[in-house]
Image (cartoon, rainbow, N blue to C red; front, side, top):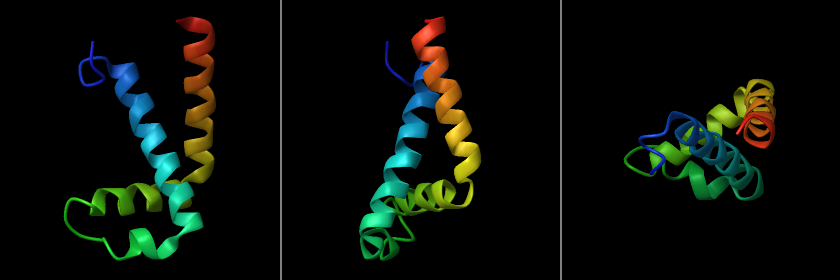
Length: 72
């Protein structure tokens, strides 16, 4: 089953995308800053979400890890 049809997998992919983009933004800021619009602007928006909402993203990652390890 693909991640589009399984809600928990979709949330996992979104959280990983946000965390990865925020990490890339911290290593090479110019890489994502030049693509603020268009299709690649999604990665810039994910990086901004990861930077500004980092406590909430961290809590979501912990809850998701707990649910994957112990509930599934």
